[in-house]
Image (cartoon, each protein chain N blue to C red):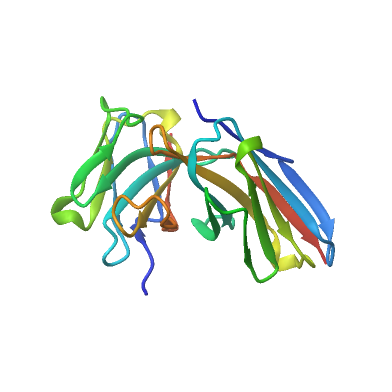
Length: 112
Length: 116
């Protein structure tokens, strides 16, 4: 059974710091991994999608990497800003049941 | 393009009452999902539709939850009767390209349900 874990559960950093969020999954048989952002009281916004054949994706200050064999992904945020404060979730679609399985998220707070 | 629309935004009901949520996906998106998100947890898939057919409802508590997607567009999710543990945010999402699992999910803002 696929399980997705995100560490840390919460993170507080000063503005301008570069940071890394971690996501791990137990079964490497996945179609893709997706990173989302969720603001309080809102739905999820897709940030980056990495297909299983890819190693990384970049969008602006965000860079996501995927190491499928070790079951890990990282989301790198450069030069963090207070507006980056949100919960970041990762999700995988596995090839077994074709379900999208989410981690519990990392709550990020960027202090001005 | 317009995003995924959900209503209502909030709902408070007493246990054993019934409630219904509505979702309108992004135009042209064949796949529609309903997720339940309990506070502090990631979303859990309840049901997935492709057009108006059910792809996966293995985690839907079928004794109390039902969902339909008539004409392959809008969808409704119903709970009857509600229990205290159903208090959560119910999120609707859609994606394009049918069974292409490399299409990103687009989420609505969700309906926050409180059962008292």
